[in-house]
Image 1: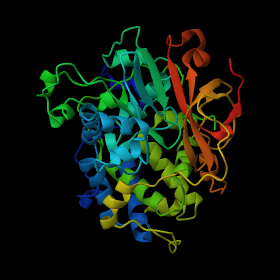
Image 2 (image 1 turned 30 degrees about the vertical axis):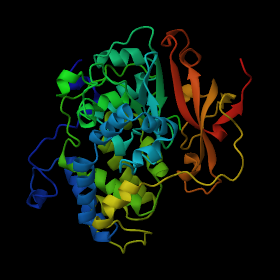
Image 3 (image 1 turned 180 degrees about the vertical axis):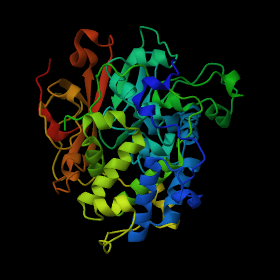
Length: 227
Length: 222
């Protein structure tokens, strides 16, 4: 896959690694080190704090929640449970939100979950062509590529070509269903359990379940890789 | 609206470029924009649909040349101004020059994890029976509203089949502008890829959208 970010307009301003941490180092506020967007965000946050519309510790709590707690490890738990418990799998495919809640998982962006199962004949791929809808409680916040125009444009018209760019080439006999997340229903793929995993524990299985395998742009890891 | 956000089927954007070991945020300011947008949404001054409408209302050239959180930032600023919570001048200066406008809620730190782990469901009690059932043939409307809507252009005026009935939900088209209308039935509608993309379709492929009842007409079985 190409790694040249210059070809992707959504990446243009993403790489401000570094030294000006707006919140933890307010001393930089009046220095020349702030980029225009950093200064703009800082002004907005100051204003909204002063107005009392937001509270600083609540903003920190939001960041902490989505940066450290919510992520694809939770979706992987759901998949591993479905692989090991046939009754759970049935509940998950029939009505995903309460089944996911059984594992203590849920929340914003996952209020109305739909889980779609890969089979030998059908591969599922999830996209949001209109914005960036993504099942936050099971997968965390979406990667940049999921939100950027190339994926949103092509997943629906050329899914096989998109999958090839992820290194995934499916047999011609495997049909692809693309799920465009156009409402508050949110989709997660239940990938096929890899061969040779009969002896793995549920936790061992979960370690094989990648984020991309739950979007449909990848497959679970082979058991050797997950051990 | 037929804005730059409606990307399904567009050509020319190049390959999908995935970043190895991608961080959740790429710069500290992105964290702040993310949190500000969620916390301001929590005040009740606007809806999530309103935020999506504000983002897609950016001029197409600006939308396509902005990073994701730059789009969020521009939309957040415009929503704050549009709802009278602050002025453009206050936003530019970062200093309040007038008293705050009352808001319904202010997010507190201790309620943040439980509140966002509970979620904010958008289904509502149905006010009437569903017009369609699983298996029904439907024709999507070929409408082009200038306001917010959630039927992508590629799926307008197309024949599909109802695959799931999800219940009644808040209608984004109305919610985006704070208009109170009855909840609408929401369906998964499946299309043969060939009915959307013709000869260039992935052979045997299917595409589904989540479509509100108002987007659909009864379609003759084929």
